[in-house]
Amino acid sequence: MMSARAVARRAPRRLGGAFNVVKLSWAFVALALLAAAAAYGVKRGVLVGSDVYLLPERSSNGLLLYEKRCYYLLLTGLHSAGAAPERTRHEASKAFCPIFQN
Image (cartoon, rainbow, N blue to C red; front, side, top):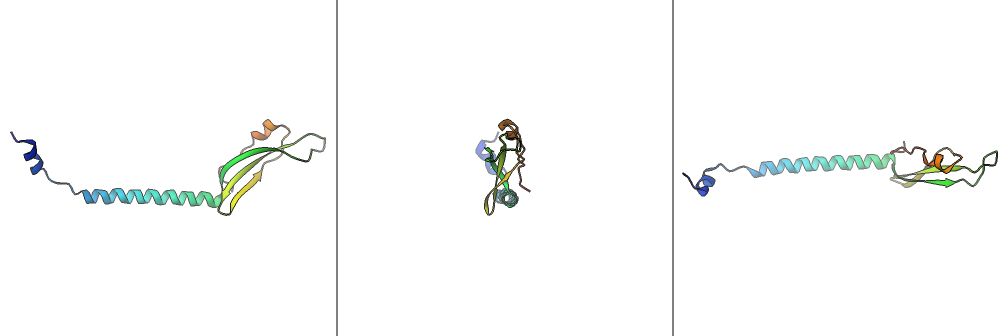
């Protein structure tokens, strides 16, 4: 029977360099895809938050109106977009803000 050292000496050695190059290339591809997705999102405007405001003007019948504002991060800075005014704060908070602005 052969000792562990003898077996280790006789075993073929793997080429570790080729495997590391493949791992490195996949890491580079993943990083490039992540950077492209981030650039695409910031160009279109990524939703970063929202808030509900009481509008200063009242409706024609004297009721208070609430509006949900959606905030988007763009290359030029933050941009806000408002939804349609609602009669209650709860209805306004249900308004939908899309993930991308356009």
